[in-house]
Image (cartoon, rainbow, N blue to C red; front, side, top):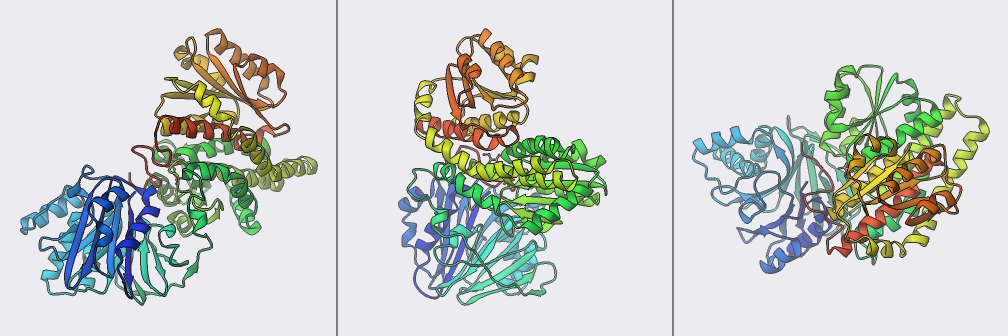
Length: 607
Ligand code: F6R
């Protein structure tokens, strides 16, 4: 939920690198920022609430001296976003500084213990206790590194931390438990960060620290040990193939727009999955008696769509479940015959990892789909697929949603073939359409990329939107609504169209815009009925339908025409694209930053 970055250089000042690294982590949090550096035997800390560039400029943080330092960009979990709560936090004597991402669950007890021992606290954060714990350990006359290690053993909860001290001025100590941390080495020095893009300008040689690991960094490299018993750990460097350009905006005004336009290429990436992993996941899915598709937010919408695909193609019942509800809703029934397919772009979502823990405890088989190599999800899954979307920086998920659908569609097809549920021709036909999906999306972007702005202009003052679809399009409607809601803060509803008459319709009155998702397919007759119902109440109808679908077009006030021939089971991928664009342009029109919706962070690693 926060971004952390640390550097030990062989020479030169680290402050500009910290600034640059934190900018690339801004998607993880952006309510306060702080740097700490060591120089000539002194510890310097500058921090404040506000966006990175503003704070760095006003406190002249780029000018800080020192070739070793740490920096933090925060998304508040304990304590309001204000200067005292910004990281780094220091001990009483101001000899050491710590930055942290995560939540220390036992911080109240530890704080009380430390207060009783005479420590003075300046903030309301859970993080500050780490600084005082280390200080307390050092009173026992052990070295700084050992004091960090022993302090870590007392923490309960999740953390990625980096800490520096004047008593060991050439080293950064860092560690992780549940929150991500990556190490990197280059000829200039050694790095640690919450995520790879922060260090990509300097190195693509990285190590993903694992849960319960601790590392000591100096300018020449790093050593890893286990927190629990201090045992050394050998780990090979991994070469990251993401280029820096892939992680930057490439001339688009916002990451979100760049990522929407990247979809034809990210979808092509998601079609090039390694066959043996698809086969492995298919084999596990085939063996399951109960099959749960578990995720949060946008990834959950992908799971809903997948439940239609698995049913339609493989004739298999799956239960899409919101990860934070899984334990209460299905936890007792999970057992050895259960397969949980967890879907998480980041692979670090707390709720999803908690559901997985529970499923594993019940001896269920856990499978994963994620975009993040080395994430926790990849380590707790029996088998997993990397969805190959490339890094997504915009907080709102766009290209990672369509890639998840692409992976899930391939799994559904493979399972259908394994189980003999599709004829050869049906299977081949679906396979051919899958290959065409990136082209459909390209076509949609070409047709509507600019045109959607006029629609946004027309509806820019609306105070309520309703999104409706039937069958798999109910998931498209939910995702279109989530994008609009999170980016523009305009209240909006989404329902399966047939359900709307059981209550939600009462909100519809003269002039309310209702967006209908109506690909050609089995649900068309009913969707026409739903449109009539809404029109009868004075709704203005915006339809996303196949070009030349005159019945729907004739009933609509505005139409977004989609390419012909898209099978209904794959329709969520191209049909969500105009909804992503609509939400993006409406946010821009309202003067909001689509890359940083309020109160949201890219990776939700807290309960
Ligand atoms: C919405 C969005 C979130 C995430 C959710 C799960 O645009 O991005 O709803 O989909 O927080 O995140 P992952 O997929 O990383 O588990």
